[in-house]
Length: 64
Image (cartoon, rainbow, N blue to C red; front, side, top):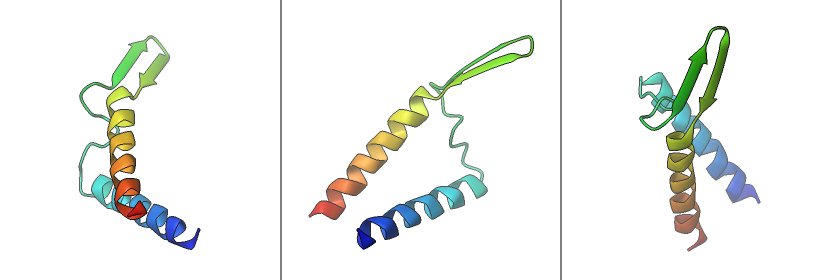
């Protein structure tokens, strides 16, 4: 459990560094934004797929 918490913490810190560096994480091509008047709907499809792939690779590496 301790290793998993360290890995999750490092992943969150790494994501924070990427966002601070200006990488538009969360606004990837494929994310859907619908604006109409004072209503905005945001569906992060590409971001969800990227996070899922990243987590799958990281977990596969650390299970070995």
